[in-house]
Length: 623
View 1: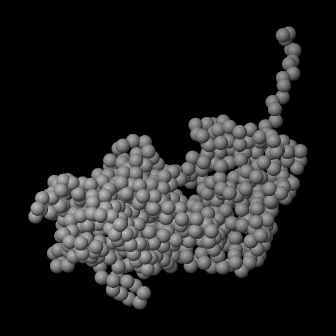
View 2 (view 1 turned 90 degrees about the vertical axis):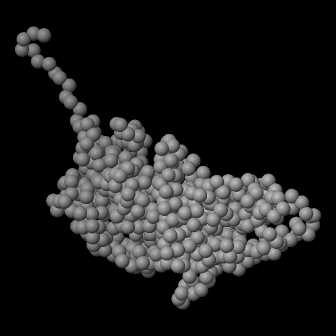
View 3 (view 1 turned 30 degrees about the vertical axis):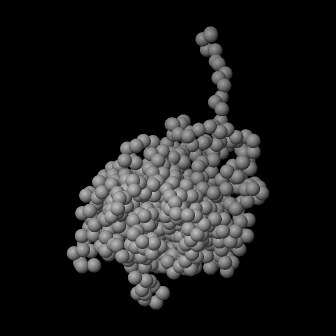
């Protein structure tokens, strides 16, 4: 190149403005992104994580091209999940190859204004030029809400554009507003979450010009049901009514099932001569399986209440109430739904912990899930309570038996919370994660869905009765029947099961357990409710006369067990080690045997210690 010669270098390409769609989950961001970018989209992953990055080109009102990024839904910049961490990093410019956005488009659900304005305030505190898309206006209008976008714009200090993304309503006005986006007015820094929530409530109140009676009713219900003091009282009062109903409403149906079982047994005896097969059918199958199936009405009543709470929208509010209580033991409201599911069965409860982002929160929830009183414990509780607790009234509409059942459920919850507190301060030590969830609308539970849900749960119970419980009952009957007793010898003493129980008895005798109770613990490892059929089969086999054989199991227990012994048995089952299926699911969810073994060991230790304390205390008090 000759001296003095100049070179025409190519001009650097103009830098595209970067615009980010940001807001709470389910605000309609993706629909808005698709409308604004059309087919001009590029999908990849953010570096180091599996969170999807969606970016596309759009043309602003001025004709300028810009890049639009659709960020994962988030409730706060204080991230509690991988998705929220990506949103936080992009907005704050935390990715090396991802410049901070030039403009934020804050997408707000017009029908859920108060909730979405909490995050919107946090974003505006960053000082980045922004506009707000007041999206899903059609749904707000359907709910009878009239929202004043200008009033909202006044308090936020940015343009607020009403949109309906799926119908392209307001998109042209939104593009024009993005073109002119300016930094919001300076806002107070270091604002706490409660202060943002209070401000969001006042903003929403000022922007909503009118609402329907139903919307006002729902808001009024939330004021009462989510009240810091009244909410927990109502929740525990409702649970108390549930457990009273389990006893009071099920009696007629239980009597009918018992009548059917007795009729079947009588029919078999009338048509079959004395034989081993007849004894197996009447004493093993009908007495064993029948003694568990008889609790089907109580389980159906319990699940009817749970399903109504879920489908009416109250269950999410119960989770919100429990969040404050659970924060005290290092957990968040995210753990409430899995733990509540564990009242049905620990298996779906443990699987539901996958929704918990924090691994230590999740592990803690898995380890305490078996302490929730699953439906398999209900037959054990009800048969023991029915045998040793008198069916007396302790107040208007309050029975002593229902009160004891309620206390057992509460004892399981308290036990779980104490164990969670210990775990969070030792092996799963760490700060509690945050919890934000959208509350569904109140609605009447659809009858069809309610009936389907009840049938599914009843079928699961009956299937267990026909498989696991049936097999365990038959095996136990064989162990109790062979070898045969000699003249003058008790069949229980001579049987293989009796010899197994005798070998175990020295370990359980100090906590007040009789040999029949010790024997019942072994098959209960397959399924807890088998303890009831085990006792029924044992007493039927060991009975010395026909009249005693025909006595109800509750009568047998009432005549053979002392009150301290019965209370110790109940205390054992509050903490009783979980069934084999639960151990298998825990192993799968924790990818190893370490935590199932820890779970098994601590539950066994707690059951033994608390059964002993209960027996010794009750004996010392002369009960």
